[in-house]
Length: 127
Image (cartoon, rainbow, N blue to C red):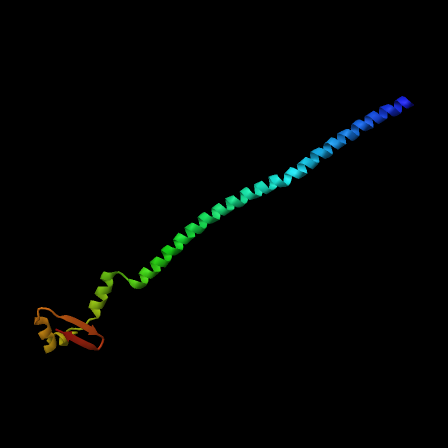
């Protein structure tokens, strides 16, 4: 019986030792697993951040281009030739002829050096 008990004890000791080894392996895995997960998460975040920065940069360029186009459209509504033709079509015959028939304009036009300033309803002819 003593022999049988010793055999059982050796077997139990071996099993306990094996269980201890497994527990140590699990402890190591548990200690390193979060580090591996954190590293993978960090790499994922870097990848997403890089993608977002690239997208943000592209969007910024696109927004600036749209703003520029809107400003240019506001300044230059329509094509210049079309706009000019529209103004010519709306013009009435002899529009502004009175201006060129004024004595003050004729005197001004015949001077060597002079400048013209037209503001709305007022007109100044300077020598």
